[in-house]
Image (cartoon, rainbow, N blue to C red; front, side, top):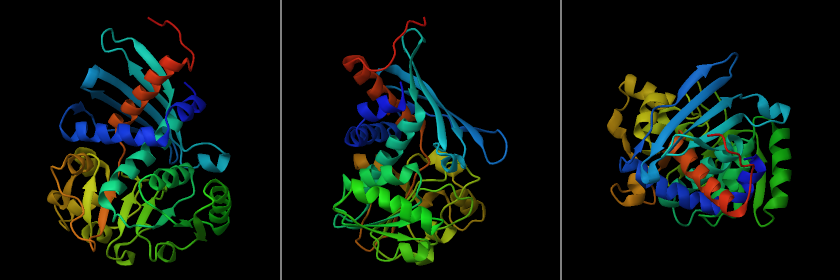
Length: 323
């Protein structure tokens, strides 16, 4: 199914509901999720392979994704690939779904789920660091869980930040947008901060973040990328989507554990544990909470299955017998 099909069939609100249920299942140990396998294919480009099994209904499949950080400059997504689902009774491939669109929606939905349970309820000011495809999706998602009135956009280049601002102002006319090039200035006074970049060096430093802020660190999904520094981890209440992947593939966490700046217990819980009530999230209004998102196959497979089931009902996509 095409990206157009995915966007038509998977609304952000539906994705948020799917992700909430899925993350609880992940933290209950009901899914089999091998770590993302990443292959260097030249320059800064990578091929990622993410298999997984969701026990409910025996759903299983794999996401195969090219990570090409420079693609946005060519008018293409930085994440290009496909999610393949298999029939649990026969092993026959049952669906091939565009992974670009699916990744954009499910990643932002997962951030919204974390923001809903970790940020202060009265949060009204948001900063998005990054101007790629994830930036707009994150605005849409977070507006569904918090009453945001002001959004700062931080771009590596002011022209890109302003171009992005002009784009989203038309889509979200009730929001006051401001463009920044400097991250430190862009996050001042913000209740919620999202990093959605492909940076290889830390761009958000703990010393800049004030009490009460919730941070979603989303863009760095493999250890060659890093968006936040060690002090950001140290001063925050840290939650992750999936402990094994955070401990194995989040550079700032790996480095902090290896240097003994903190240990594995600094991760207070997975977001699924917070959702189910097994772990407490924000305790005080003054807490700085951090959600370190790696992105996991369970999210892709659950959203892909939602798209597939809805497509069958509504006659979307191209169907063929490949058994």
